[in-house]
Image 1 (tube, each protein chain N blue to C red):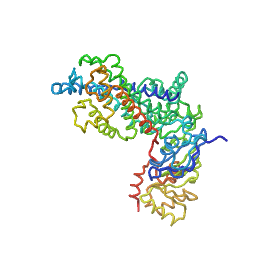
Image 2 (cartoon, chains in turn orange, red):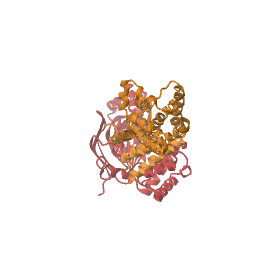
Image 3 (cartoon, each protein chain N blue to C red):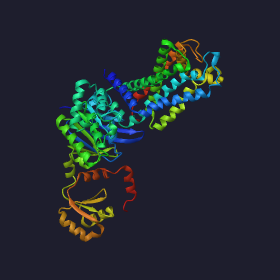
Image 4 (cartoon, rainbow over the protein chains, first blue to last red):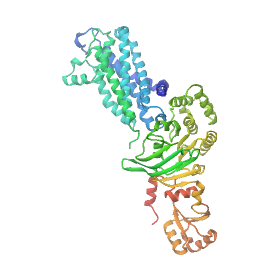
Length: 260
Length: 321
């Protein structure tokens, strides 16, 4: 009962912090949007759609990946404060309170996940521009994948932030690991056209399944270009990734707080 | 007999191989205001981390109201409140939102939480700022809000780790007035870490930590009386050689306390004039007074309470001989 209350309070705090920080709203949305427009228009005439599918504009191809990028950025922004709050003040109050530390993970992750999902779904407003009609089931799939991916990224961000002493280190790790995960997820280029070495990495990358799952959703499960597995597999892998990352964050937070 | 509020038994704690606490044993009675004195790096914060269940000690046991901080941390957490050096407040949230969040952590909700919040905000004189974001508050106001946060769930033991550091004297006085009032009304036991002597003087009992060792423990008046009554305190260019000369020529008990020389003759005024005749050139100034808590600190810890380790080292390098 007290754990649920803590989770609720932490989730509400994430929301409040977000709406009060305009730079964060801008950072999490504007950057992916700019990337989408610039890359989309830049590659418009040189891009070859995979498997000779229809509706092959690069702008449309890129959109699912942009959603994944929004999820990634939002997760980074919502967990970076943990680096500072862990050692200074705020989180200490949570740690000395009679509430399970696991609730700290779930509250923070849930807040970050909801923020990420809502922001990603804003991009659905661009659907008419790219001539895609996902249908109800398609949107359901998109929401589900967004939620699970947001959860996975936020939990992973939490686990990394918990071990970091400086926000600089946190940024370095995020750029080193998370951005490549996105680059190699089939978000920017279709897997079929990639070099064999890259293809193996993309197959092993859990983010690929999130992006593919989003593609299935956007195309209403028919004629999906550039997907590396069926919708069921994509959803299952994304869900498993979320569970695994949440587990990682829980394991981290339960370790002794100070080095002994 | 009820368990003491705090019972620390032979606690040693190491970070890696560096010992931060060495065989510390101390008790704090329920309802007392206990002051833990020590320069930076003396182990105060480590002791607080152990008591607040953030980490178990490497050796020994720490109990809060008879509950082991390592084994029964959940029960300990319900009994303690904390106000640490940095406020545990979210700057983006308002005062009231911060307290609502704190309430959620302790299962406080509804009318109970609202009433408690309003009472504390009024008593700490921050009620008129309740809807302001914490980021807009001055340092003194933040500390008081943080105190309200620490007291929200009516803890039996409040841990205060240098709660007034960075505050100006006026804000410090207001903070302490609020603490004293709440203490009188709620009977909360207070464990205070500080290096400010005026704060230590307020305590029922003080302990002095030096390099992780508890070197003194007692009531302020007792500790002061242990250093003798009225004695002579000398400032000198070369305290060590002055002490040697006095001991050689007069044979009275003399010791170095920080940068001053304390001489304890039978009749201080008479002795002082003969001292000036014999060694006046070596004395910069002299006073006759009773020992202060700062003297107690210097005698036991070997350094001034406001000195950090680094400064102590440089001082040693520039010693008089």
